[in-house]
Amino acid sequence: MVRVRFAPSPTGFLHIGSARTAIFNWLYARHSRGKFLLRVEDTDLKRSESRFLDEILEDLKWLGLDWDEEPLFQSKRFGVYREKAAELLAAGKAYKDGDAVLFKVEPGRTIAFDDLIHGRISVESDTIKDQVIIKSDGSPTYNFSCVVDDSFLGITHVLRGDDHISNTPKQIIFYEAFGLTPPRFGHMPLILGTDGAKLSKRHGGVSVEEYKRDGFLPEALANYLILLGWTPKDGREILPPAEAVKVFEISEMNDVQAKFDLQKLRWLNAEYIMKSSNARLIPLVRQYLYAAGIPTADFSDAYLAKVLDLYKVRAKTLSEFPPMIDCFFREDFPFDEEGRKHLEKPESREFLRILADQLAGITDFSHATIEVVFREFAEERGIKPGPIIHPARMAVSGKTKGAGLFEMMEVLGRERVVARMRRAING
Image 1: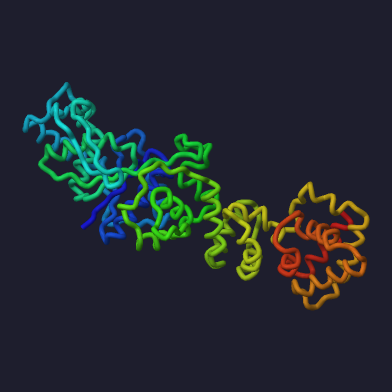
Image 2: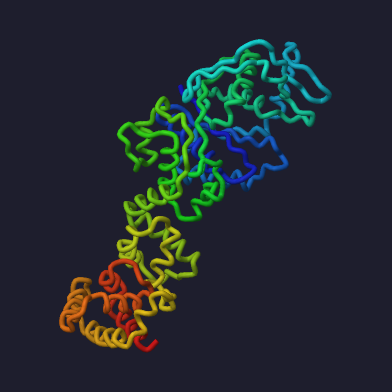
């Protein structure tokens, strides 16, 4: 059975690159009907914090990843590492240097492995110095504890970033020293910015928490990270993780570095928002409106659903909703400065006055009826619709652009629309 693991370090938030590693391990486990395990690398007792671990685990769940078995904590296994080091000392394969323990690297040999992504990789042992396995403070080194724990967990495949390629030969010699068969290794090219530089904040956020806060849907972020390393044979770009599980093949993973394109991610997120049900979006959008100081408690889900029907085709992130739709929930909405010119012309105010009176007398306040009123008004005066639509949009929303004006008016309702138009005349 395939057994893979993700090994987060609780010294900070979950990095976007680490999240991709977790996703591919999860994909492989679920596709192979294997096990996806967690190993918490918390040997750095000074820097490891429970708040970071809680956030990492929450982010993994948010991304839709579930794991099998209880997580293994390295901080609870220091005694095991020392016992394993003692075995190597007793076998003459390691030696003490003060309080530290070092592993003897056999010179003059080639250490080779068949990488699942890159193919055959060989390293000469003469390029590797004797390896510290237990530090002078009694804590284990990364490569040693990694091997001890992966063998204990029965890990069959190790999928991780390219930055670990140099660690693999060192780990292989530890497996050999214990008479164990190493797992299969696969190293994924790292994620770079669009300029080819190491991914950093200037390319966008670097932690999952930042993307969550900015209003990205978890399935959209997971979908995008999957595409940064693998492309399905049919070339699909909209591929939710649950669908990716069915068609994922580790042998098809890319062996070239992937570039993180924030605009592509925003496009993908917009696609997911557009296709999401209102039932899914309503509680999420309410949270963003509340955080923006826009109270929605007095407005029903049915009303919010009508608003979302107008705007979910326009938003690329959930955080974009509050400034787009604030006018549906408050009367003190701000006015776009560039649009005030549409309300300053005397003829514009006169148009609004007449239209407000006409709309006040409509019993069927549907967008179709409202449009007829506007079109007939323009035709009677021999003018284009623009000179009346622009002032009306500003009056009812404070914005120069948005959803269709007549659809907006229908959702807002006759009383609010008429009151806002009359207020704009006098404002």
